[in-house]
Amino acid sequence: MRGRSGVGIAGCRADMGAETIMSTPFEWTPEITAALMALWKEGLPTAEIGQRLGVTKNAVIGKVHRIGLVKRQSPIKGGPPCGKRKKPVAQVIRLETLKTGMCSWPEGDPGTEVFRFCGEKSVPGKPYCESHCARAYVKPSKDKDKARRNAVA
Ligand SMILES: [Zn+2]
Image 1 (cartoon, rainbow, N blue to C red):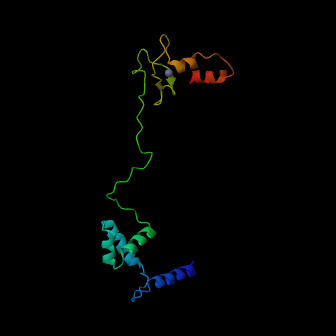
Image 2 (image 1 turned 90 degrees about the vertical axis):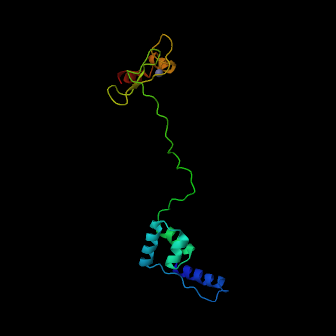
Image 3 (image 1 turned 60 degrees about the vertical axis):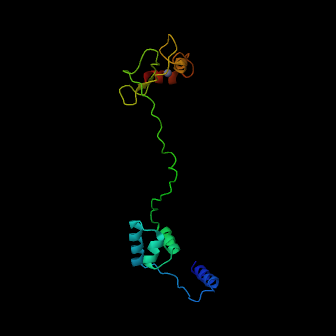
C-alpha cells in the first residue's frame, strides 16, 4: 500500500506540473485534527474551517470523512428513515368495550395485558365473526389436539 500511495503522489505532482509551487501533502497533526473537530462541532462551514486551519475545503471534507465525524444537520431535508412511520394502533377490544354484535372470540391469555376480544362484526345469531365461527364450529378432526389447546388458552 505504501508503495502505491507514493505512486499516487508522484502522479499528482505530474498533474500539477503547471504550478510552480510544489505543494507538500498537508499533515494532519493531532492538534490540527482536534481543532478541526472543534470547529466542526461549532458548525462552521468546511470552507471556513479550511481557512482557519490553512487547508483547502476539500482537505477538510476528506479528513472529516476519514475520521468519521458525524454528519451535521443540513438544511436540505432528506427523507426520514424507512420504517419509522407509526402504525395505526388497532383498537383493543376488552370486555368493557365488547358490544352486542361484536365477535367475542378471546385472543391472548385471559388476565394479561394482551388479552382481548376479536371485536369484528359477528355473524347474526352467533357470538363470533365469520372467520371465528369457522374456527369455533370446526368439526373435530386430526387437529383435535390443537383445537383443544386453543380452547384451553
Ligand atoms: Zn372474530
